[in-house]
Image (cartoon, rainbow, N blue to C red; front, side):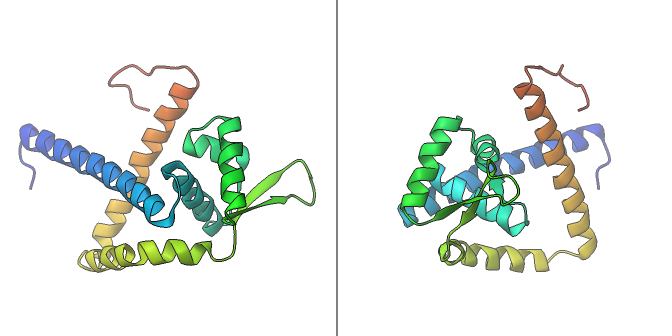
Amino acid sequence: MISTPEDADGQRDRLLQALRAHGTAFTELGRLFGARTGLHTTDAAALVEILSAQDRGEPLTQAALSHRVGLTAGATSSLLNRLEKAGHVIRIRDSADRRVVTLRAADGVDTMVDCFFAPLVARIEAMMAGHSPEALAHAERFITDYVTTMSRFLDDLAAGEAPAPNTRI
């Protein structure tokens, strides 16, 4: 139980350190996924972004992917050319507006990704089983709020704004 402001500060510091460690581990997973599948790290990250959007039922456009992976439009086009040539990605023109092109993972890509990540998913599921539904709901709310806060800050930075320290976003 947190009983003093110092305890609360320590808890926040440990939590932020754990979130940074998660970011580092997530980046390393992407690097290893790319290495094991013969893809450059950025190409692997783009492929995971395309699959994630597809799984949510929200296929990405090239512009949205460019934003997600932090590349220019030209660099993203080159990346997609590589993924398309390797048979990992398909570009699909919107039937209502032929100017809109969405990105889909090619058949078999799900299997490639699942083979790499399945052991981790099993470990995470086992870890989560050790926590109550209430604890998981609380963690979900916290992480959602955390990501929203980071996303708003990134949007502000992209817009050329530099929020003042200690300003609630």
